[in-house]
Image (cartoon, rainbow, N blue to C red; front, side, top):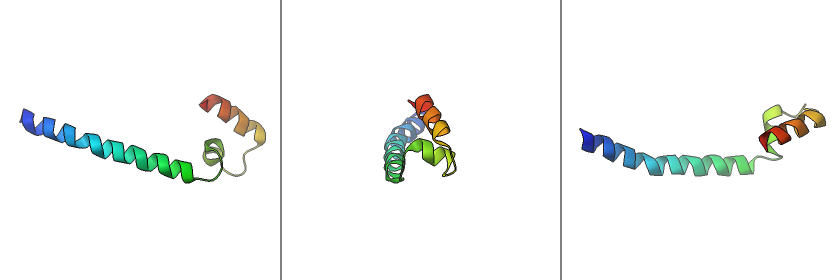
Length: 56
């Protein structure tokens, strides 16, 4: 039983790495910056700047 769990945990590492890469690539293809994507197109420049500061 322990071997099965260990095998499943080891096989989950490439899956998680692949998901991380796919999400990163999708986020980099979105036009604009992340704050605009989160707030939507009707966000004011002040709220976008505030969120940019909060996100780092």
